[in-house]
Image 1: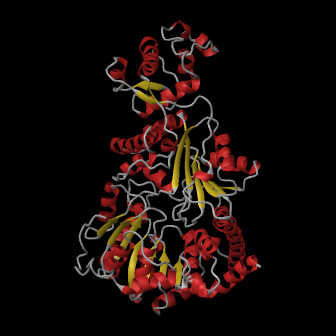
Image 2 (image 1 turned 45 degrees about the vertical axis):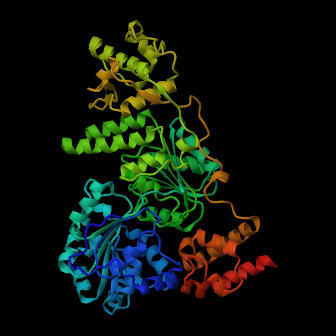
Length: 621
């Protein structure tokens, strides 16, 4: 945590802890104590202080504004960017006995009127609105008629114009401080570098807010990055061997790949659904609802899907295309394992990904500074992919945090080899140099590799490239190994992609030092044959349940599914898997004992306690 000052009201005192917060945490949410900085944040906001909170997905950000909203007089107004998820957020709070509602474009005028009346009458604890609606005159007039406990700005990174989820309407939220100067504001996000954090504070007029920066580490997520070979087969192997029957997300760069991949997985017997902006709104809503409410559904999507997803039991996030930035990668992988149980972040990428991303940057609209920013973001992502050290260390370093090697990424579990690739790099760079300087020609990766490996292809013969001095000097490396070399040369800026859209390769200013032998180049060695990409579950962080407890856990999941269907809500709204696991291990036989289980608040104890005890008792008979 770094302190950037108190609010200008000067009334926040970090030494004061409000006992009502702990009481609400236990009674409503069923938790014995706060985690990490939650207590400090809650106390600060209760006292009227502004806060900027950076906390990883699954770290408990929502409690930081929900608890103060229940303590402070009035209604907590939550600005959330995704109206498609508001219903589930309100359903989850309603199950806890919290008076919550939302205002968005999905409601008819009668529902809107009822919610507005409840707000003005002081009958709501929390009200969710989209930023577009908040900025309307009607909504602002409504808010002026009621009493506001606080403003919570969720997914605050959307205000950053350099961010991966920029939403222009977020820029207007600085007006909150102008119109309601005495109402505390709390902005929250799971993804922000130091630069982005400063930008958020400036754009939301939170210059006097206290900053709370939790660790970005998600130790339950296992990071695994592999070289792309036959990516659909590799993905299928991951799902069948490591995550059979699990819910997960597969991210693709294009809409066509989304649909092709979803169709492929369905043909392989996996319940997969597509999601991208080109689908109709009704189809997107239906697919998202199925993903949230059913077990074991795999969503294949572009990055249009996922922000604000609260589903806690996503067991894997797979990328089959290279993400554009570390921020985007971290945000997307953070949707796995929100419940704290083991999850996998798996990425496959190859030479073509690097070529494509470089070309997209060169062709992007904007000035040179904008393209340099995109290039730097891609370089950081490539550095994470190519590192031979701990992935988690490299990832957290990007956000300015340090840890020791994690022991739970592919590089820690199976340390990769590095090798002196200087000579190989010189061969490749020489081939490109000679083709360009001697013949004024540029070629793509495949043809260059054919020349180095001495292959007599029709193209090599047609252009007379068999007479080049570099022809056949690279037969010591396989085609796959040469692709790895090329990929790493591109990643390190030793090669560039042409700006004419043909995907041909050219030297850069950095190439000279390698060609002259002034720079040694250590490269990551990739396996020539596909390797098993997953680790057996027996090595996961979460120990398997004893057989008897596993039986109870599965029975409770079946019971929960029935309750969720009857209520028309996702299963996790009733109880998270982590809570059901604790119940299965504790085997309570009284309501009092059940009430001690984390995640069982008073309202859920009243609603479901007897039913849970009956389910356990039937298994014991």
